Length: 535
Image (cartoon, rainbow, N blue to C red):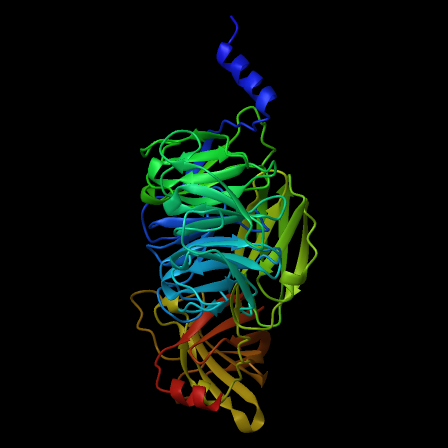
């Protein structure tokens, strides 16, 4: 069966040259909230040079920069200082990747990096370079911005230094406006304006010579409070028909198709405001009262494979100042990747868009976030990883404050007494223990029982480490020399102190078949303050 609707549509296209387009819902992200990736009255949308979506929020008074899956960073807060906003509206991005914001409540325009470092231009007034409630912005060139000076019913073209020209006045004739809200630049360099209260679209030269289409209503090519506007690669004008809760796609002659209706389901809108078009001619809409971003594409257009950063790592993730870290990445479907943030020259690296690794040396203490933005023919992707850089600890030095009783914690008291003689750079210790042959239970042990052992050690120290010779003494009774006593040099011991309270003992005593490594702690803390002061 022949589909007569499609046939008639094709005939109309052939006869009139009308550029028609149907769009389908592709994806959305966002909900009401204050966290990153959530929104309160999203207004303006734009696409930056890394393929990310830039969004202004009048409710949260900030700017968010998001991926298509809703992973976002944010900057801005309420206020009048540079980098602060009051009811931000339209946003645009110029060829230098500068984010341009219509700071409506402050009657000014701000030019920001995606990290939130901003410069401002304008202020309240009627002169050139002054504004009253500006709502729309568009990048005419790398140095010129088009601004909808809404309550002055005019369009201004300005540099960041406020060198401006203007055209328009209040009225309904061509070249006159009533509350212009959105601006865009078409493929011929003309300025497209949503003439909101006149419910029409005007297409103007930079000198203010304009043509118009549209009227008040709900039919195709009619509007009810149009706000955001964008132009796609085919020259189609995409208009947010706000109070009709829809988007219209029009030719420059005013022949339009529409999609959307009132609601909160996918593809429906509640007072949408801003719109942008990406490199694939997908339409991105700020669905204001639904507090979300919706993305639409033309059916029968097979989208290219999305960019995917499968791995982005830092090894190790924690280093000391002056050490190096290896940053590695693996990416698919990317044509270019841009590094940013981080430290150690990361932002200046040349990145292979398919994968690789590089080493950076970081001398500054802190936590640094390394970011990788990758773009391609499909949806872009980005990833980040944090590296913590700690201060290099000062070397610990043995001193006389180490003199104390020390023990191996798990033995509930087994240990030895250490003496430090700083004047001769020597450490001495005594360690009392038992031999394997202990007296039977019914025999009273005497101090000096032949099975007892005294282990002493002595030797020099350097920095935090003492290297000692071990002597094993056996036999003998206290206060008597009648029994044979032997003292044999038999083994080595190393003590490395990590601080004034802790250390590690390594020992090897051949005659007792003893060797190993144990941690030690002070038994009491009386000398800690002296040790720390001397160190």
